[in-house]
Amino acid sequence: MKPPYDITPVILKLISSISEKIGAINAMYLDKHSPQLRKQNRIKTIHSSLQIEGNTLTEEQITALIENKRVIGPQKDVLEVINAIRVYEDLGKYKSTSSKSFLNAHQSLMKNLISDAGNYRKQGVGIIKGTKVAHIAPPHENVPFLMNDLFDYLKNKDELALIKSCVFHYEMEFIHPFLDGNGRMGRLWQTVILMEEYPVFEFLPFETLISKTQDSYYKSLAMSDNSGKSTHFIEYMLDVINKSLENLLNYENRIIKDIDRLEYFCSLKIKEFTRKDYMHVFKDISPATASRDLKKGLALNFFNITGHQSTAKYTLVES
Image 1 (cartoon, rainbow, N blue to C red):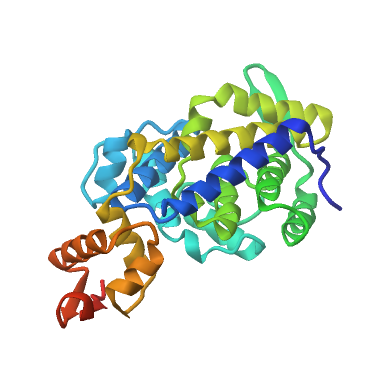
Image 2: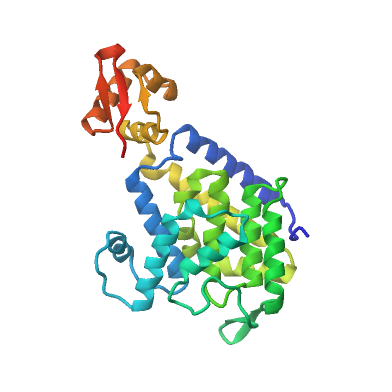
């Protein structure tokens, strides 16, 4: 069965806004971030997602761990970060519609943190907020069937990826399939679903905004629980995604620079090309600008050159 939700005017407006921003990002070649921005955003993603779960490590400490440096901190917090780094580095190997892939991700994310990492829970659980029981999860014997239904829903080609990612995130949190790691898995898998449709989401740290609006995050989950529909949570998450895309577009009042064009062009893996080929990708630049770009690319050892001036041919250097 299709998980219940309503399409509201707020949802329609947000989907329209998100679609416009994704179009602008693609037009500005921002779907292929610079390595520096990718690294910064990956650190923000890991820091924010784990901070929501109580991890105390700073962005600086996470950076050090990514660079294989030693960090002083609680052993559990360090292990959580090391696991998350490995999982996010391997995002491309996960398939959003595969329950096996989902369980493999949980196994990696919770390795040496819980005894049954990578397995659905075998006991009943409840979520306590303060002194009150905020949520009683479905019986453990129902979890495999409920999760299989949820993965079947993800395979529905008629549903928008933006909607499916939010619905999965909410429904997974409601089912609470694991004894621990449900929150970080919900946020991780929403990224996996979105990046299959829109590559920009691989490095878009929307978890940062969730971390800054935790009260609204949990309130939207509770409101959806009370209504029996994921509508409130969809509205919340689409707003988070919309603002995250807006932040990317406003990144340092971004102006496309030669290095942005060069890194994007190299990502296309065109092994041999001419200046004309380069200008075919970047239709709004002049021959002089293209020549300056290519000269800088040679200086940075991005590619080699044979011939001279307009007849020159360039060969991409294997990284």
